[in-house]
Image 1: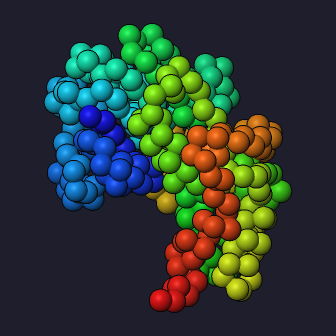
Image 2: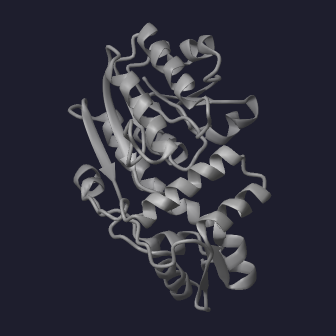
Length: 290
């Protein structure tokens, strides 16, 4: 039995679907009863649980051999992951695969990196086997620009020319499937990127090509971007974390490209052009024909 947390998100959703298609016994953990229907697939068991309530984690992990750990960005993330790790130990889980992040380090300039480093440490010190998946920034984050692109033919963001090897979350899910269903991945750290490093200006050009109409990137400062995120309702700590991420990108630390996705899955990672075609309607493009 495999337990998957974060089962309704950009990684967990396709991960659950692929495991179900393979016929792998799978149990999905969801936070609220309202989300049960989101992950219903034939052969997939769904449990409602809360990272802040350890007894619900015990119930979800009972009888599982492997688990995929993905917690949302939140100030309580280290506490939540500690609860999960301890519950996994109590219930006899053999191997935990954690979705971490590139730049996970105790001395990282990003709080996201420091949080993931602490969570990785907890797993290393447990009695269980572990594997860390460290993806780069997700292509899916650019869907935040989709309403602007659809309505105005432009989007506003920092870092016009800074290149980042952004990753499709579906490729992270594909790597997670192999890691959960195959032997020999224990004790490994997998750095996951897309096929190349691109900038916001490149993204505008690729969207232009896919949509068949002009798309412009309008550069704003990191501080202005942070202010806009707070105005739109993002918690200040999270806006600060995103601003720190922009700063690390600006310094060039997230431009490196790895071949890990291809090595593990046997196929090349998706390009941004593929991502844009798959989400064409969200960006205001005409729906694909029959």
